[in-house]
Amino acid sequence: MNSVIGEPLAAIPGLKWANRFARLGTDFYTDRLPSPLPTPYWVSRNQALARELGLDEAWFESQEALALFTGNQVAPGSRPLASVYSGHQFGQWAGQLGDGRAILLGEIATPGGPQEVQLKGAGMTPYSRMGDGRAVLRSSIREYLCSEAMHGLGIPTTRALCVTGSDARVRREEIETAAVVTRTSPSFIRFGHFEHFSYSDQHEQLKVLADFVIDHFYPACREGAQPYAALLQAVSERTAHLMAAWQATGFCHGVMNTDNMSILGLTIDYGPFQFLDAFDPGHVCNHSDTQGRYAYNKQPNIAYWNLFCLGQALLPLIEAQDQALAALESYKTVFPEALEARMRAKLGLPDARPEDKALIEATFKLLAADKVDYTIFWRRLCHFGTPAGREAVRDLFLDRAAYDAWALQYSERLAHADIGLVADLMLKNNPKYVLRNHLGEQAIQAAKLKDFSGVDTLLTLLQAPFEEHPGHDSHAGFPPDWAASIEISCSS
Image 1: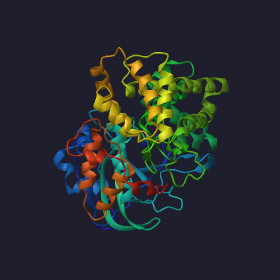
Image 2 (image 1 turned 90 degrees about the horizontal axis):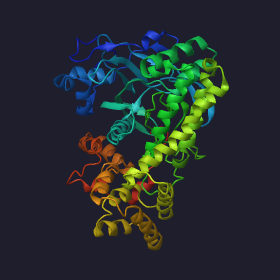
Image 3 (image 1 turned 30 degrees about the vertical axis):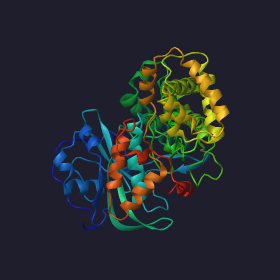
Image 4 (image 1 turned 135 degrees about the horizontal axis):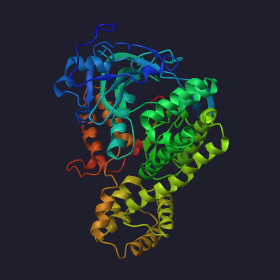
């Protein structure tokens, strides 16, 4: 493939482009064509998402699709651009940031509604700062798999359509090869977009952006006396539900900067993420996070801190500070209620009782004391209703007396429940498969040798994580000892 972007492709079956974000005006972005990569190849294609988007199946396997999703050619009707935003990074104001290695191709009409299509790793933009605008195979596979894993778990997220690779060399801690991940979302607008225009006193643009988000994604906010306060409340509540889902699943994001927070309450920007192995509430998954700001147990409070930053950014539109603070208060109510509801489902409790909060807290305390494997505990607990199942759970604990006391408390709570219904509820809420770091690492090492079968196998398992998938128990087992030595950082 040439180093210069090719002529626009012919009309593509199933792709009808709209460019609503581009119509906001050039204060919000810079037009930017992707930078081509030499001799691209497919790493993995997400056929399930392609069907949801209404893509033509034959075209999705074509060289034209490979060229488009690598950034080597442009689709007719698309309007490639990089958006500008700012943000707080690790608690400090970082100023102007922007899409440093992501290029938005535009928005397509799909059976499920409009979806933006973005190439991550498609080359330098005006917002790349000192970066090269590229992504590497390692990080692209991680994002591809984890975004689909989160979707399979029922957690709001951006999606990943495909990964393409190239033997072009990219320097990180070491020399790696380039890759591009194509991701989709109803919108990639972040908290940082609002901060950018608020901190630079561009209040007219701030209003244009807020109106755009309300009109297209939160139309009910128009019904209130103060639509921008209503927007802040709606985003706060969506974010609260997202944090409850992360905490219940044992997911650590790793870099919850305000520019990595979706205005739609989606999980976005998969870098140094991790699903917990041993349950350690203070676990820090990001090797770059030396202060532990984004530890697992701090994520809910960090989300509120980020929402407070969003509230400050919206103050020129809300005007009354007390209205902004009142909008933020909803987070403090919704998050604990949402987390308790998710934990009751994981415990198989069909109804809510006052004593459930104490049982949930006792469960977390028990797991933390022995650093029990989080996912395996919950999956085994699904079979607590049988003697063999109870013993399998007990085998996870060193302090058997502490476990027995907890098991008695749990048994009493289930005393009059239908055990079959309890088990069914638990099996639908406790996944057998999550994207553990060592599984991702094994697939990445094989992919570096051009063996992509491990990526596709994980994709299949993670898209249906609550199913048994006979023959794949090794993907649901304990992590090997070497997994503890895997270091993931902001370059991951």
